[in-house]
Image (cartoon, rainbow, N blue to C red; front, side):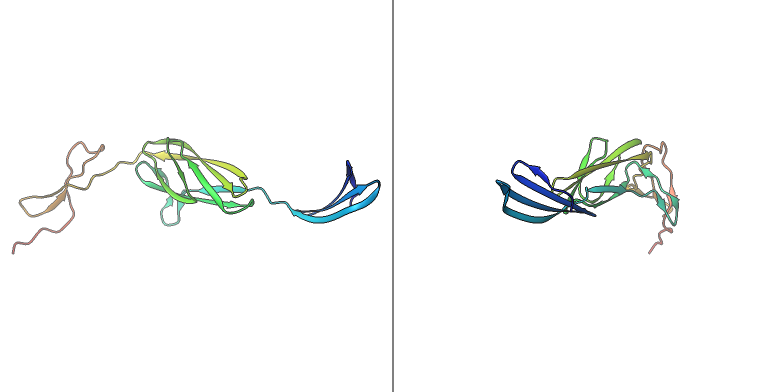
Length: 176
């Protein structure tokens, strides 16, 4: 045990062990021991957190985040005092909460996505990652046309199509 530290009429002894503090407290009156108590305080490790989003697919290789497509965000937390709350800021004007969620970016650019993890003892940490979002074109496949020959065609609509493009998707219909 370390030497005692006197505070007024209190004496405090402490001994460090890894992540614990063993404390002994004594109340002295006129130099005589009146009350003594010992206890161990377990110091919690600070809360830490991080998150990930898809950047690589074993079947396809590198993956990019595209506009209009949902992107999965997965968070982890440790230390502190569970349970944890997870609060997200996507730096595109939207926020969300939850450990696992998906988000859709509507415009291309680089976003500083921030996750705040708070434990039940109100310990907190924040982590940020840059997410680069590339433009991807939305194709509206809602218009189905059947021409006089009996072939079914889809006429895509969208910002990348200035003319109708016919694509045969199904075999020709047979007359009955």
